[in-house]
Image 1 (spheres, rainbow, N blue to C red):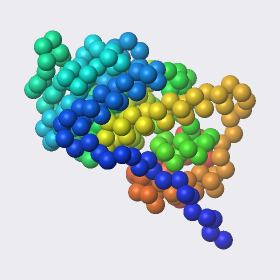
Image 2 (cartoon, helix red, strand yellow; image 1 turned 60 degrees about the horizontal axis):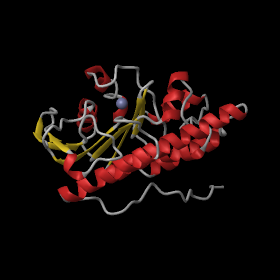
Image 3 (tube, helix red, strand yellow; image 1 turned 45 degrees about the vertical axis):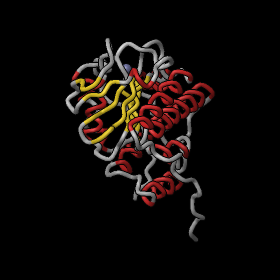
Image 4 (cartoon, helix red, strand yellow; image 1 turned 135 degrees about the vertical axis):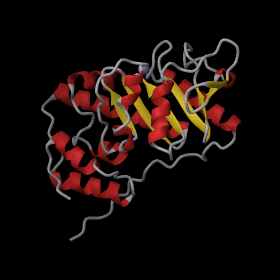
Length: 250
Ligand SMILES: [Zn+2]
């Protein structure tokens, strides 16, 4: 007998920001949320959004995300060269990372890079975030792969996302931080919030006892749901199983 359908739905958010003023306002809203939630400290983290095919709006280097205002944002071209920047403002040192994400994913409109503490700690220990422990991890994100380690703000730091960002909306740069993408700054931010929440649950599971994965049949059902919603990118199914040892053969 068929099991009843899963009623969970992918995030449905407020209308997407359209004008430059709306995009600036949402980038700043996300800056403040990232800072308030402790996903960044001091001047860490950077946020960007596509204005059009050739222009990216991004946070400036050296500013706390907690105090940024719309006029502080910088506009760069697809090579990272500043097109518009207020006095003394330079594009984020991690702009190459953002540009790599936009190159690999033509449909995304925003990138958030932050330093969520629990997710970073798990990446050092190589403990998968979520794995097949809780359904939410599979429904919301599929998987949160760890990239190879690379020096922050280097060209190598951008190169490590080239391959995995093609298949996942949330990645963790090993020992460094998160990269989440979306069709709006808010969507990319909400994925970051999910990454750190699932990382905290994973940490609690490991602290309190022995992690036991979901049944293979349930993992299969959750992956089927991703496929039905058009969220399952090629390779995800196999990679999820490889990571947690569950074998939900398609
Ligand atoms: Zn960073």
